[in-house]
Length: 273
Image (cartoon, rainbow, N blue to C red; front, side, top):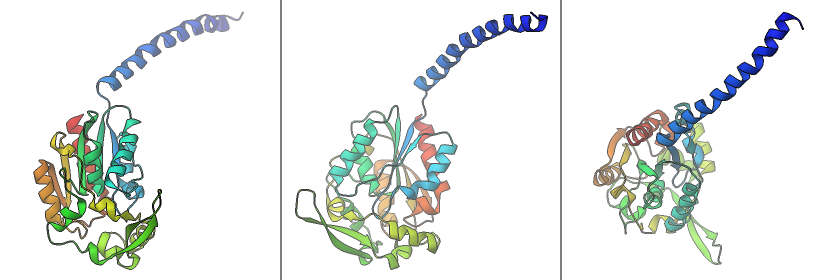
């Protein structure tokens, strides 16, 4: 055998053995790091008249920062049912979680996190944070400033067990100014066409629990919000002892100001990691 080939033949098994032997040590170290200090999964829950695409700008930024992200579809059919659905989503997530809710989604995360020790932080983005026995409709009416009632249309829908329920949609021609005044008109028109109706029962149903009483929370107040009065958002955040950030933004703050939303979420994730 040629001397160079003989040298390679002898050297390769040694090199491969070294690599194979080194791999488990490296993998074990990485696994150990993940076990002891895993990054939380950020779970983003949209609210009424929106869908999971409203989180797109936030998702891109969180993923760029290295965080796993989920943005499930919120059924918007009833608070207890929506909360149970989110609990099912959380059951499939490994490791710690930071729960983020926008609008009515805040009420859903407040209930879903009760008793779940894996939820390390709650983040309310222009959102409801009800106490036990309170409803989203009641909290929105507690302070002046919401013009939502003038822009929604009720319509019937079939219930799974028979009968009909009532759901609300924002008139498409009024969606831009009501929901997303700081979003470009063309984008707001798409959002209006894709909006998810919310059952009136979901907005009127009373909360069964309030996880913010035991879990650290952060809140972003949208000071130009026409759906939830900013005074209501601020009052709920102070009651919950949340770390508060304010932004001059519409109710669709996650669409118009994703960088600010991401900043608040990352502050929560880093503080509890």
